[in-house]
Amino acid sequence: MQLHAYNRLGSGGGGGGTPSPPSSPRRSPRIHRRPSKGTGGGGGGRTPQAPRGVGQRVAWVMLSILLRRQAIFLFAPLLYVAAMLLYMGSISLDSVPHIISRPAPGSVYRSPQLYERLRADMDADNSTDAIATVWKHSYKGGGWRPCINTSTNGLPESNGYIYIEANGGLNQQRTSICNAVAVAGYLNATLVIPNFHYHSIWRDPSKFRDIYDEDHFIKTLANDVRVVDKVPELIMERFGHNMSNVFNFKVKAWSSIQYYKDAVLPKLVEEKFIRISPFANRLSFDSPSAVQRLRCLANFEALKFSNPIANLAEKLVSRIKERSFENNGKYIAVHLRFEEDMVAFSCCIFDGGEQERQEMNAARERGWRGKFTKPGRVIRPGAIRINGKCPLTPLEVGLMLRGMGFSNSTAIYLASGKIYKAEKTMGPLLEMFPLLQTKETLASAEELAPFKNFSSRMAAIDYSVCLHSEVFVTTQGGNFPQFLIGHRRHLYGGHSKTIKPDKRKLAVLFDNPNIGWKALKRQLLTMRSHSDAKGIEIKRPNDSIYSYPCPDCMCRSNKTEVLSSLQDR
Image (tube, rainbow, N blue to C red; front, top):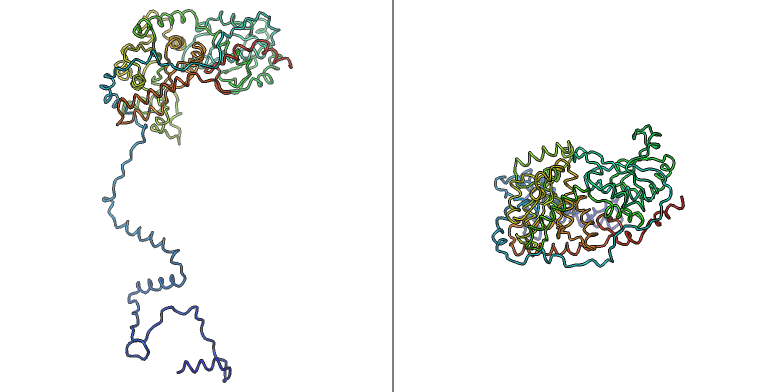
């Protein structure tokens, strides 16, 4: 009744005072209390009981606030995370399942286990020997002709003498020599027979004439580049007969021939004698055809091994052909890089256990003091193997070649240094290829004695025997196989006749515990076919002219082109 009276006052506008307005319905509770039983009112419902405990009251208040503010969707994730944390805290760690980590395919060296498992099937495989039919593609890039220039026109007056120091091993020195010939010819300079820098790793004091036929070198280049064995006395007097007084250019690696024309030539004309040291890889591969021709002329024609090396190599080739009479004298040459320093440098893990780990750590410290133990340097052997960076072991080479279809009657020449743990690692390879030979088995101790303590001369013997093989197999990168691939292209009409395996794929194949012999052989035959197709590839702009010799730039360019490039000086 009082409510009705209030409404009448609020709506009438009269009375003794201004009444208060009614409260806003927006904030009113949504839950209406019903009168309890025994009180007046229309309903007979019961009033909900208020929470009794303090915790329940707080929860009730929080829930009411969330419902009123409609923020439940913001706090629900937090409540869920809190509940999960409480739940996880109540679980014993002993009941958590153990997660087993499995190495990635190809990351572990399991080739010995694969060999033992597949050996019986391998020996029972009587398929046709591959050496007679290994090469099916032929080069179609044009004719190949000798790159000797028969021009008899005389050379113009020299601009001065260039002296270079060739550093590194046999084939790195070879790069320096060929580049020096190209630079000297381009600058119309006289080249002094290169000096070989003694290195603490190769420890070979050999001079140019100990490895190469010096007279042949000078004679072959006579129509293109002047070459002398020493600087004239008159010139040396100007520098007090002291080579350190001669101006030395520090040329950046892979410099263009234009740099030599712009920076080196003016100093050469002024001084009449300059030196460039070091000189390995100091000329870009992307050079004019006149420069490329001089490189090819030096590498494939002028650089001939000295008579002692050439004579012994010829004997070794003849002897291994005699041992390969079943295959008409054809043999395979394998460049195997499994020496201790190569294994150590690769940081790969093989099957030698703790002893191998200690030996490799010691070898790395001897050869590259501190390089592999720098703070922050992380070495991942598994990733290295997956990426195909590990050197192939002798066992893996044997598995690969047998899978590519070469029978155990195939003669193999192994070009290598001292194999790491040869008494253990070479056993499986000899089981698969009993006709395997090395320069030590083909030559007598007396024949090898003059070369024994000279690493570059020994490498030159290996190079010569590999050059004349029916198949060349490279198992690791480096200058040795790159030069041989190019030299074989030049020798065999554009085809390198080289097997260059996909080592990433090999790592996965050799780490597969379920692969059978037939499946493995099918994969390896495909890899061999791919090498056959790659053997006739044509040079691209930035490829090494030593790996991809170009017959056009060797034969269609001549001395006139070289000299015409200097007419604007």
